[in-house]
Amino acid sequence: MIEAFKKWLSAYNIRYPRSIAYMLQASEYDIHEYASWLRSVKDFSAVEKRKRFEPTAKGIAMLIIGWLIVFASIGKASFLLWWISGNVKYLLAAAIVIALPYIVSYGIIIPLIVIKAVQVPIEAIIIAQAKKIIKRHPAVKIGIAGSFGKTTMREILKAVLSEGKKVAASPKNYNTPLGISQFVKSLKGDEEILIFELGEYYPGDIKRLCELTLPDIGIITGVNEAHLQKFGTIEKTKATIFEIADYLGDKPLFVNGENDYAREELRPGHILYSRRQVGGWNIRNGESNLTGTAFTMEKEGKKIELKSSLLGLHQIGPLAAAARIAMDLGLSAEEIRQGIGKTRPFDHRMEPKPGADGVITLDDSYNGNPDGVAAVIEFLASLEDKRRIYVTPGLVEMGSKKEEVHKRIGQRLAEAGIEKVILTRNSVTPYIEAGLKEKNYKGDIEWFPDALAAFAALPYLTVKGDVVLLQNDWPDQYR
Image 1 (cartoon, helix red, strand yellow):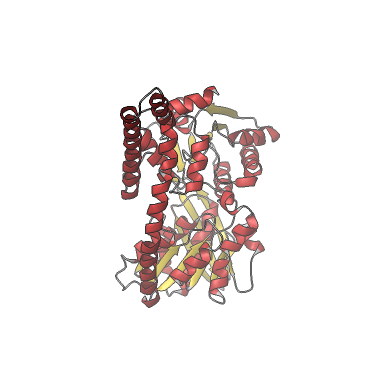
Image 2 (tube, helix red, strand yellow; image 1 turned 90 degrees about the vertical axis):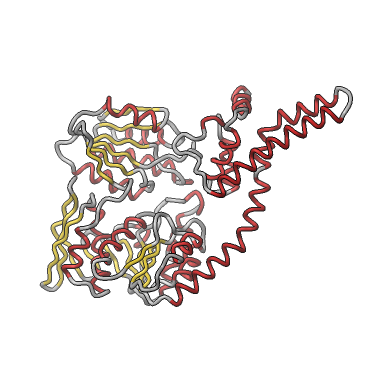
């Protein structure tokens, strides 16, 4: 009862409409996710912790609507005080003021539904126009699907193929029909290769994106529990991602051979890639450290020695797949070598950041999936003569697998002998602690209320030569 009163009272601050607009924005205007967040929030004055409200057109519209609802409600209360006689007017006006937080937070859903209804036909037109452009475009089209690793694969391909071809790739997280359509509008028409990242959130998504992008070559980076909260089961996740296989038919499809779920769906003609081989090429001498990753591709007496600045042996498979695709598209061995050499750690994905204090921070805050976590822990385990510190809030959207996934993270950390684990308090990190204890973890476990507090404490917890891994971010809407 006291918590509910505090929650209600926290809504009476000047930032409340902004908080509501931010919650909608952070939920990507998904009414179900927004409503779930509304029910779980404890303090409306503190919803903007990890990120901030972005003044996009839609965001500003929601903010304005929120304020209009506030003023309309206050105006209604004032009108009742003026229009109605007797004491009942005070009760009615008080009821409106008391209900104001609920009127704003749920009332804003109605104009949102109206805006979405208007957007649907406009977006359909934009997507239809993009589909016509893609259909006429002569470029070789590559589609990348998977629960994880899509952005890394996209950037590797772009770097390698750009050595010998004119390449355009969808930027940032433009992996929805509308996002891809916006990217297509920027094409000049003379590109030789187009690379599309295909996002999946619900069954049928990859099929629709394939019908839009018309890929000639496909890549499946892997399948895991990422977005399991939306899909419900791993079987639905697999079926959705392998919709690209259904679309491609006999066309080339590269599949991550190091991912168990992806291998289960393997079909004749699919090309496996891993740190050991890719499409007839054997991979030798793989090694990785804080300066990068090197390996050799060999086939029938041919040999290509490759070096990338990407970190981790798990990167060899994607790099080798890009090299094999480049060969098929006519690039020379030297062009491939140069392209692989230009691959660099991407923002917030195993991105090394040496500090003035001699501490090396590996920023992996955009890596929020179990396979990525396993690869990172494997890399940390390979580092010698370094004290390793692992900082994480855990993973989101693991659905029914959240306990299993997080216990396994703890077990991996213990098996790897990581010296210090820093956890933030939320609904999943206790499972990581349980996994650590199950494997008799000998290191230190530090707890903080949130990521910001943990980051602020790091300078006091580290010394020169330490390696600090920042694993994943924890969006404000998750508890």
